Length: 431
Image 1 (cartoon, rainbow, N blue to C red):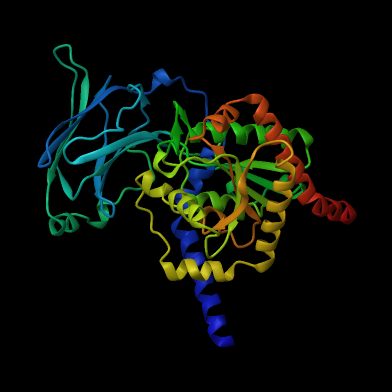
Image 2: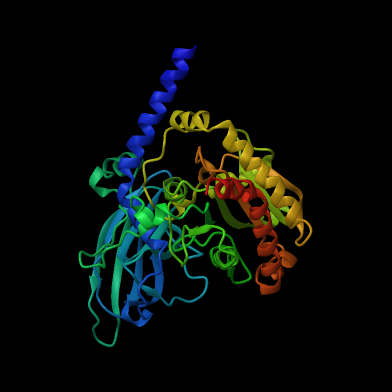
């Protein structure tokens, strides 16, 4: 039995190392996204002003109106069937609701920034289809330049044959002259001045971003609500000066789930707090209040499982075809998670609930657990906080209120202080 456990540990460590090597490029890019980018006016980017679909279930055409010609790359993905179009960073000025409906082979499409210098359009398909033709037309006869994508229905066998390795999308700009990503200090081995900073690192992770809007209601997107909350929490913690505070993103960019966790692990973070805002479909009734989630092998209830499944699909929503860990690898990673780390995560969750319930409305079952990928760092205490339901009118009013945000951020900061007080005291004695 002992030898089997040792074997699993060695296999898990090897897989972790392999994953780290394979994800080096995307880590550098996601870390760069967490740093302030040079101020560039949106008018410097090409502008997309209109998008439409035409055709039927056999052949469907997508047309994007743009103010200048651009380069692009289009690929197909399976399970679920999608088409991903990578373009240089665009200023999307499309009418509200564009892409929410479909036509022919396209169920719906979404668009947004996936990294500095690169945007993406992702089409959800009704079934297998091939890209029969794709091209950019120059402006002519009073008409703008256009990106055109022509899709054609195919059977599953023909579709699978078209999925050559070179057709897999990668996290990089679609044009060779896109501005290179810079690697911030947090992504490289610590400099001497960083070693002298003994303050605990707190990583704040606003969910979603860029092409991934998260939940939406009444014109409000989860990605914007949680970013505003995360920035307010960062400012509150930095003002106190007790911690090094790192954001996984501080603007409207997309970061893959594994890279969010990697930021916390590379910085040996003392705490990882992921911020989200849930929503329930109208058919499932109503819910309200904040909920705090920790990692577990088995979901605490059906709602927790639903939410974990939804959040764990973030990479697919953004169209990435990143290599997922096989189920057995995920199990190994969970097995390797230190019991102490889960204990600390649960301890912080209880502290946070105690602080938040005195200032904000909590869900009727405020502490839950499920297998969230973003919480799977084996050595970093981690929680995911759903600060409210955008599908609930009262919660949404709170989420967009600066006064409510200030109270919620204050209670969260108090919980972080309480949780890390012992570590700070230990550090003070060492000095």
